[in-house]
Amino acid sequence: MKKEQILVRITGQDRPGLTASVMGILAKYDAQILDIGQADIHSTLSLGILIRMDEINSGQVMKELLFKATELGVQIGFSPIGDDEYEDWVGHQGKNRYILTVMGRQLEARQIEAATAVIAEQGLNIDSIIRLTGRKSIKNPAKHTRACIEFSLRGEPADRQEMQSKLMKLSSEMEIDFSFQLDDMFRRMRRLICFDMDSTLIQTECIDELAERNGVGAQVRAITESAMRGEIDFKESFTRRVSLLKGLDVSVMQEIAEKLPITEGVDRLMTTLKRYGYKIAILSGGFTYFGEYLQRRYGIDYVYANELEIGPDGKLTGRYVGEIVDGHRKAELLKLIAQVEKVNLAQTIAVGDGANDLPMISEAGLGIAFHAKPRVVANAEQSINTIGLDGVLYFLGFKDSYLGDQGMM
Image 1 (tube, rainbow, N blue to C red):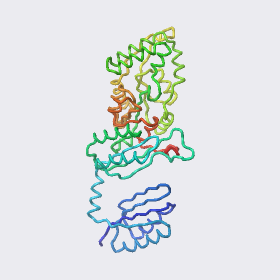
Image 2: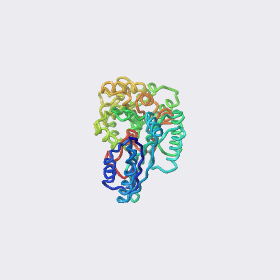
Image 3: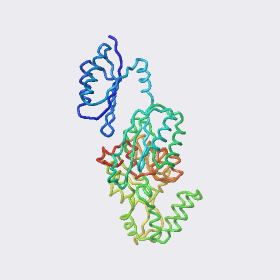
Image 4: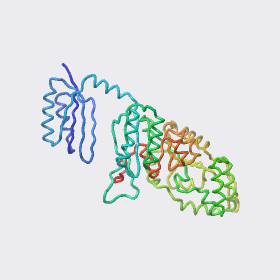
C-alpha cells in the first residue's frame, strides 16, 4: 500500500493533554512518527510532527485532526513531504552538530541579529534555540542579572577560524560572550575543572596584598609590570617579588584570607559543580595558604600553588619551598590530575585570566578566559567578560531550572 509523509504543525495556547489527544488520533491509523519537536514560549505552543502513513487514510486523519484542533482552540496546518525531500533532510542529519552559547547581562535583538548573521555567513543551520536562564522580572529585577540562550547548529562552518574571530570581535563590541563547541559526547560529560585563583576565583592578587602589608607594594607592582612587558620571565619575577616579602608576620596571611573578595558567581558555581560530581582543582601561581583556605570553604579536591617559606620566628623568609607553579606546570598538573581521576582530556575544563593560564586553557577540552587580559582572550576559544564566574555553567549546558534558579533572564 502506498505511503506518504505529512508534516503536521500545531500552534496556539498550550494546555495539558493536547499532545496526547493528537497522538490518540494518529495511533488509531497506525501513523509512524518520523520526527517530532515542540517549543513553548510564554504559554504559546509550537508543535511539529512528521508522520508517515498509508495514503488511503491521510484524508481522514487530517479531517479528525482539524476537528480536534477546533475543539482545543489551536491552529493546525499540513504540508506533504515528498520522498526525495525527506531523504535530503535525512542526509543533513549526519552532519556535525555544534552548540553556540550566547550570554550577557541582558540580550537584545541587535546582539542576537549579529550572532545569527555570523551563523548564516558560515552556512550553518539553526536546528533549535533554548533559553538557559530563567525569566527576568520586570518589576523586581535582580542585582546580578544574566541572560543566556543556546543555539543548536547543524553543518560545518565554512571557516571556523574566521567564525571564531568574528564572534570574539562581537563580544568586545556588544558586551556579550560566546562559546562555540562541537556537540559531542565529551561536551555532555565534562568531569574535571581547573581554576586559576588570583583574579579568577578571587578579585585580587594575593602577592600584592602581602606586599602592601609589608610596605613594598610599589616595588612589587613594578616587577609585575616588567614581567608583563616580557622583560623578565615568570620565575625570575616571582623570585624577586617573594624576596620583598621577607619579615612579614604570618598572621597577616590569615587576615587577608578571611577578607578575600570572592568573585561574583563563585558560590553558586562551586555548589553546583560539587552537587553534580565534578572534580575541582586550583592551579595557581599564587600561594598555597590562600588556595587551602578556599579549599576548606568550597570542598575543592586539589590545590597546587606556591609555598612560602616561614621561619621559626613566624615570619616570611623571602623564599619559597618546592617547584614554582608557572604556566607550563599548570598544564602538566591538569594532565596529571586527569590521569589520576581517569578523565579524558576532552572532559576537562580550565579557567583563568593571565598569560600563565594559557597553557592549561589550550590543553583542556574546554578552555575559558575569564575577565582576562587581551592576549589571553585572543588565544582562547571561549571567554567570559560580561557576567560572573557562574557563567561557566551555561557553557556546560546547565539551565537555571536545573539549579532551582528562576527570574534571571
